[in-house]
Amino acid sequence: MNTALPQIHMPTMNLHRSRMMVLKTLILGALLACMTSAFAESASFGFVEFQGDKIYLHTPSSRASIRSAALQYADEKNKSACCIRVSSKDVLQDGESSTNDTPTSYFRHEIRPRPPFPKFNFPFIGMALINVHGHIQSSAASMTAKAGDGSIVLIEKCLEREGVNLMTTASFPVKNLYYYLGYEIDLNDVAGEPICEGVVTPSPKPSSSIVGN
Image (cartoon, rainbow, N blue to C red):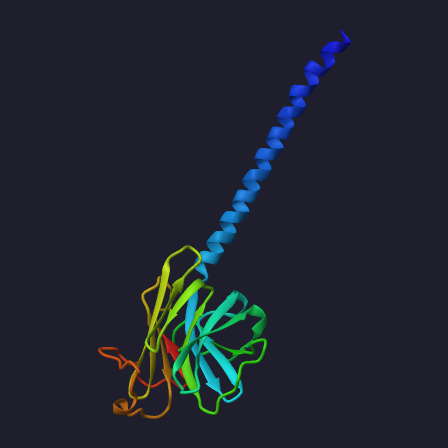
């Protein structure tokens, strides 16, 4: 009689443990799927601006959505080089946003890399990729890297008479950013820099330096 008791209770205990293990596996899988989805959707791009000892990131991405960024910088010959890697801790604050009469905001974040980056005496406007990983291909005309879902993110830069265009073929809500310099560039005197062809400059000129569409 007594020997029958374990035969009644043990299968129930094993079934309960099996159900708990299945439940834990499902919860863990759901969490991983959410994390992967969020990572894959958060890649972005923007301009990086060096002004003396200040570095600014102009982008559609809010500060809260930036986990990391790869920033071009100017070498000792004032040529585009790659890259300064910064984390969310290096992004200090949201700056003023501009909308160019659209519902999308564009932020200017101040960046302070750790350790501090060497200062240069001339201003520089370069490209930045946000929340990408792995190897980055970079030149004066483009940057390429992988997003969290493995897709390729390509951004391209070119100069116009009064500003700099930044474009992407990635599936971002914003496909184009324009940095208005406020003065005219002599396009015959910018050796090594890509010149825009067939790009429509926003008109009228924006009151803020960054616009997008």
